[in-house]
Length: 240
Image (cartoon, rainbow, N blue to C red; front, side):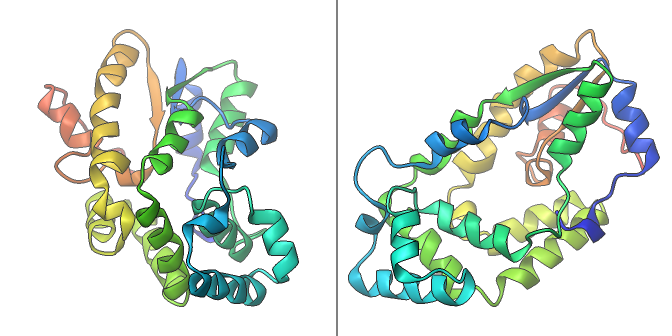
């Protein structure tokens, strides 16, 4: 998240430190070598997903937005999974301007000997993209290129909603503007939320636990908040 929207007051720091365990989507970030293995294609090339015309558009976009020549782009991307292009473009757009909640939580936990546990593995998260059809992966990249002018505004709006702590508005925005994410909500959000709830019940049964997951998982009828309420839990918002 951009630094100006990084909401981390002293109260939040204290809540983490008072916990016996920190639970995140994954138990700490994978190493660079592990991450590279997950984003590389096992067979074929990145360019197999695109027509010649689409490839030409991507290369022109990479030259303009990422300052990569055609040979450099082909060399860098040929064995990468399609979604990596979208991720790279976003990272370059916000290079040096962001803070990471995951890394901040992880640092606090390690400095205070708090156990770190994950609801998923990094490999399971990567598999979500692998399960998309080739056509959906192609569309994800092309949609990112076509709507590059709208992307910064959408990210700004999402961050503003996040700082206002309005999880249901954030959920509705994903529904309306999420592209492939909205189309595949069952696999990107709903089914994962349902898989997390039994784990959360077990984790919080006898230990004070701090749970941090992406805000898109919280709102809506199949969000973690509503699912826990259906299990009989009383949830009380904590004002930060």
